[in-house]
Length: 195
Image 1 (tube, rainbow, N blue to C red):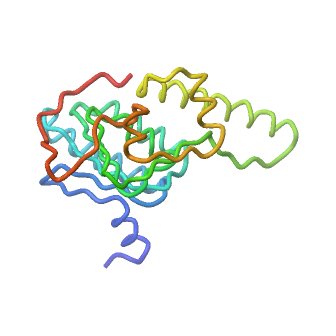
Image 2: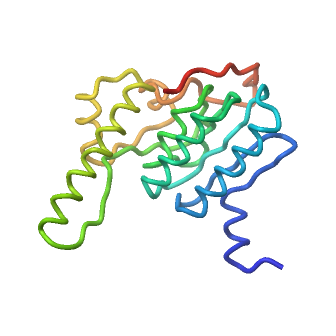
């Protein structure tokens, strides 16, 4: 029998294998990222021609783990349909934007911001950490620019502080392709080049 931690982890990254659905909820950390990647690789290897649907409802989390999940999505051979539901914040927003088809539920909240970091140590360590964090942030801006079509200068301004968007605002910003409703038709999804 699984202990309580395993039970919680199973709830926060769930795979409905026969329907090719992955559900990502809760804070993104190393354990959830590893589980997410395992599910993605499993479903992609089973049928590279059939799309995977990823439901995302997260406050965000670790930038390194988000990068690993993003790279796994890019390496997947099959098309990916991302759906934002409830709240999609911080690191979760890029995952939502990176889908081949990107949808959002009507009452979902989006929040984007700069890369956060906790820095400790000597002055030398601090300067190294700041330089590294700046590089991570520059990469994030480039990816957001790619998926939204927004210039990097605008992204730098928009993400200086927490930037909350409604579903309609996320659509207008270019983070998603559609607002889903009960009448949304799930048509065939084509793989597009993410990199």
